Amino acid sequence: MTPLFPVKRLRQHPTRQSRASALIAVYWVIAILSLAVFTSAQFLRLEMETQGSNQWEFRASQFADRGIALAAHPDVERWDPILRQQVDGTGGFRAMLRSEGARINLNHFLVSDNGRIILGEIFIRWGLDPQGAAEVVDALTDWIDADDNLLPFGAEGNAYRARGFRDQPYNRPFRSLDEVTLVIGFEQVMAMAPGWRDAFTLLSSGPLDLNDASPELIQLVCQCGADGAQRLANVRLGSDRTPDTQDDVRFESVEEATALLGIGEAQKQALANLLSVDDAATRLISIGTAGGVSVERSLVISGRDAQPVLLEVQTRVLR
Ligand SMILES: [Ca+2]
Ligand SMILES: [Ca+2]
Image (tube, protein in one colour):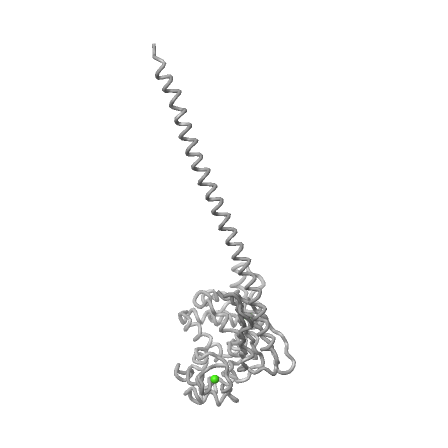
């Protein structure tokens, strides 16, 4: 006969196992509860931070709007200290006035041979190879010209239909920079220069405004040396070498500005329709800051001094 002992053992064994399993289950429950409590605490903290951040963001946009209201006033000059204010202990604003002509007007540059050459040079500077740059410039031109005649490296209806887009290209000037992103090949530019939008506009009169364009854009458009473009930018700053102060120099004519660039007469002639010193559109930029959060409001208006027309509003939270 088999003694009872093994039976007892058999009975004892599962009991120990159950206890061990129960213990493990308890550990799991504790672990899961701890995780749940920890996660809830994290969510709560995140929620509170988001609430706080939203409040500061709202306050920062209010400050930014104060700057815009002042910058939009025709009697306020761009050097006026009223445009830079600490409002209270939480923050304030810093507003600027810039010519919209400081950016390259794509529609304007695409309708002249010299403008297209310059755009190609810009894309090469941003990292495209010469063939890629020629393809983008031709495709941009095909997009805005009214006909369906294909430029050597361009893209007209057939190319877009082959990709499933029956209504493209629009065969008219660009109405928004979002449309530019639809052009075949433009994804190369977006990949190489993520900040490409800041270099372009569709809202200026057309030519590059030498009173406000960056030295980099002046060098690219005027095809001059970096020292020439920097010389022009330094003259604009006035004797205090600081922007937005009362001694800033504004050029009265394109000739006055290009004389500083060290370029020949033939080149000045070639640039005749691509340069200006007094674009009609103004960009008002105001950065409001509150509790460490900054919000930038940017308005483009034409006719700021007489009958202003609002052309564009943009807002972005600066991180
Ligand atoms: Ca076309
Ligand atoms: Ca100055």
